Amino acid sequence: SVLVAGGITVSVVAFFFTIKFLFELAARIVSFLQHEDRERRGERTIYDYVRGNYLDPRSCKISWDWKDPYEVGHSMAFRVHLFYKNGQPFPAHRPVGLRIHICHVELAIDIPVTQEVLQEPDSNVVKVAFTVRRAGRYEITVKLGGLNVAFSPYYKVFQPGMVVPSKTKIVCHFSTLVLTCGQQHTLQIVPRDEYDNPTSNSVSLIDEHNYSLSIHELGPQEEESSDIFFEKSVVSNRQTCEVFFRLTLHSRGCFHACISYQNQPISNGDFDIIVLSENEKNIVDRNVSTSGVSIYFEAYLYDAPSYTNTQWQFPPTHLSSSQRRPSTATEDEDEDSPSDSQTTEKVKKPKKVYCYVSPKQFSVKEFYLKIIPWRLFTFRVCPGTKFSYLGPDPVHKLLTLVVDDGIQPPVELSCKERNILAATFIRSLHKNIGGSETFQDKVNFFQRELRQVHMKRPHSKVTLKVSRHCLLESSFKATRNFSVSDWSKNFEVIFQDEEALDWGGPRREWFELICKALFDTTNQLFIRFSDNNQALV
Image 1: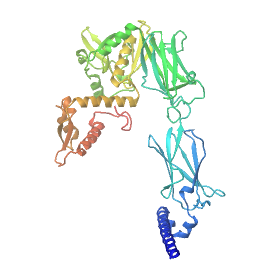
Image 2: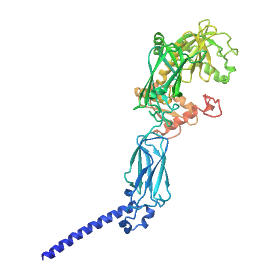
Image 3: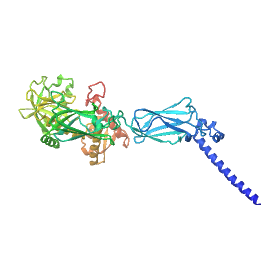
Image 4: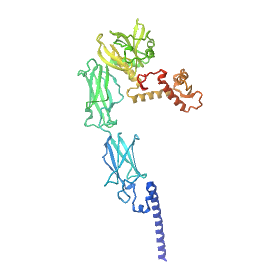
């Protein structure tokens, strides 16, 4: 009886172990079939699974054709070695459902890849090629039938390339700097590689020695002068990929500077410098801090060309409106000349004029009988208005300044306080656009100013009833009595004879249509000086 009981116990235990094995086998087969390629499910049998005669992602291997870290810009490749579960090579020419995904971790940039099946004797190898141009950490995911291969995902770091002068830039930089004699000014330089990645890689152990500076005084002789006394020092921070260029000039005047890397100019390394004395600097600060008031300077106008003899000639109607545009800075600028037509003869001798600099515009006027102002030229205080600095004029021996905005004819002026005049204009420009001439910095400054204005205004709604058939006229009538607070409110646009609730759609449509109408040349607000709509003025 004891033997019978023992035999029954052994049989029961063996039965339970058999049931457990069958359940585990069934579960693995179901999992295997779920991740198997659909086109090949009919080819697989349980016998293939028992023998290990199937492609197993965990048995596959990855080999890399490079060593970490590697520079960007090169064609990279790695190889996926396919194996059966039993360790035998799996022919890669058969459909395997291999999926490769490469992505920049921080920037979420997907990288395109190409796959190539190698020939004998490596017929079980798939070569994956790709190229990265942004430095940083990348995630490489390799999957077979939805399952990760081996230790996927992998993480690889690609470092930036060597410093390229044409890509290296000065941060928050202007085409003209206003400095004080004897005071240090620091320029922040961001070295970049060929693909615009910040980098500190250099062929030299001490990269600071690769930066050089050349300065010459602006005047009749555009040559580098050894009499200009200046000091410079370069400090590099390799961790943040920044270079600090410290410059001190000990000579007053107007200069042109060029920063080079390995004797090649950097991207925005050409700029002008106005160096003022301490007293001149205080005068400029006082001029700029006086908002809404024009500062005037006595000057002499040389060779003022007429509008009718220049290639920038406008139609008579447009010319009259542009010359009669009043100034909003002071009452003096609101007065206009009795006649806005320019004489056809060039001025043969210098004419005494007065230059007014306000936060918004630069005007050149002359006075009849010392009391009647006549506006000759008006330039906007914007990056498009360029100054050229020349030597003394032949008559009064005063320093000369040429003003050119690319639309009007250039104006040549000589002024005793030329450097203060130019510095006041430049400092006003810096203040207007937020401290940098780069496009992205100006966009950021504009958005900050817009948010600050918007936060100070009420956010209630204001209704605009406009007609789709005469959009520009009806919009002007609806907004002509708006105050600054009204312009800051949320617009609720209603098109006449149309039933719609403005949840954002009509407002967006109105903005789109009104912008098209404003820049449509048939409305005579703008004219073309080329054959396409990209050239409007």
